[in-house]
Length: 208
Image (tube, rainbow, N blue to C red):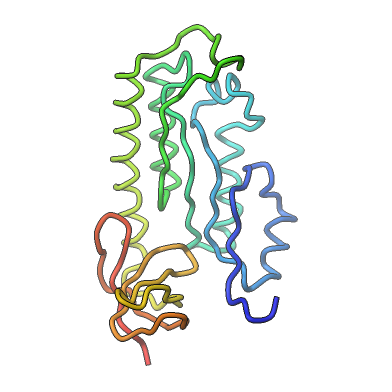
């Protein structure tokens, strides 16, 4: 579409990320290399109970397939904590996978039973306290993986689409928010990423 600088994909299932998918994206320079791949759990046993249709290994294969082409590609995800029957070991598998992927953002939710669904009738329903504690651990880990990912970008020059006039803040193609003093809203500027800023962002300087 003329006049559009960027296209950002919405949520994707890991099984969508085939070699053909990656080849197709390679041919579309406007597509941002930030991918929201819903994980839900890093435990194969939990994924089977969720009927997700993929394994942890297949999820990691999708991530690897993308990063082989774009090493700086970022990933965001959704995770459900405390699905019925989730053991501490199964939850630990989720945490380990999150560390391996090094997510830019983790959206963590406690399992919430919905009337009439199979999951609501499953044995092993966890307490609200347990689910909240696991969500808290996921949020803390998300802050850690976001920091580690953003540290990889320090010193690099990235295009930033400036969206906010007052704060001079915009986004890299990887969906990292960057404040660029002197930038104007609506422009794509080249910015050197110089420092981390808060729990999600970075600060940069204009590159002439």
